[in-house]
Amino acid sequence: MYSSISSQRAFRNPSHTRDDGHMLSHVAFYMQEAMWKSTYVLLSAFLCMCVCLHFFDVFLFHHAHLFFTTTHTDMFMTLDVTEAFSTMLVLCVYVTCVCVIPLCVYTFLTFVNPSCFRLEAWILLCVTGLGAMLFVCSYVLALHVVCPCVWHFFLFDAGHSWQYAPRLAPYVHLLVRVLCTMHVLCQLPCIACVLHVFWSLPQHMLACHRKTMHVSLLLVSAFVCPPDVLTQAALWFCLVCMLESVLFFVCVASAYSMCVKQHFFA
Image 1: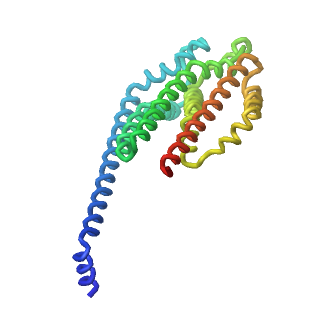
Image 2: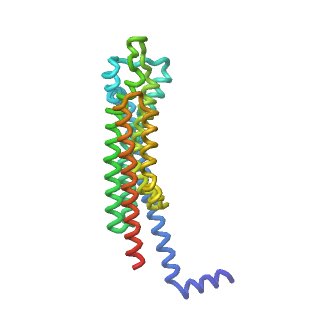
Image 3: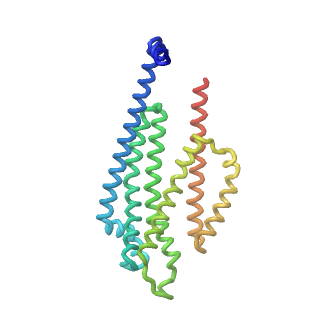
């Protein structure tokens, strides 16, 4: 009895059944596309990881060249085989992530772009380009500015008091932490822009307390850096630039949201 009633309803309203089937086919197509794109990314990550493991010494020398130049050493010390293997995995995972992130971003853009308006697609492309530029700048800044300052801070006048033997694992772990920290800090403008689009950050409160945040950043730079005025001033300038860039992109995202709302409700 129930089947006959449902068949009669489907017969009376065939367009409803047709729309449901069409929607299910679109959902299945999108899920299949997402599955294939994820498979491409995972396969690329696996191949890149294999290449990094094969050329581990090349990547290690590239990231340790400045350390050798600063400390006037030419070798690392390892205590056991597992330490060298774990260190190799850590550095290879970092290099693999750096190489696969552009592919992940490209697949995400190609998946999301058909569902965006033209202006939203251009804004998403501009944010992606800005994030890529900030990522490259953070890598260069961390490897050529921050890391030499860190080595100089920890090894200042060390050669006159004791003789040290640098270990491989602590160096690589510290290097990866510094690089990841710089990547996250330099991506704060893009992160703030995306957060403001979804959760509307308190823009006016951030603008009112800007001077207080500048003084707080000065205290942080004085606490973190060694007792050197130039180093403290450089760190404070970098932190202030990141703060101002975050406020700027929050203002841009707020203006864009207000413009979209005005055109929507007009």
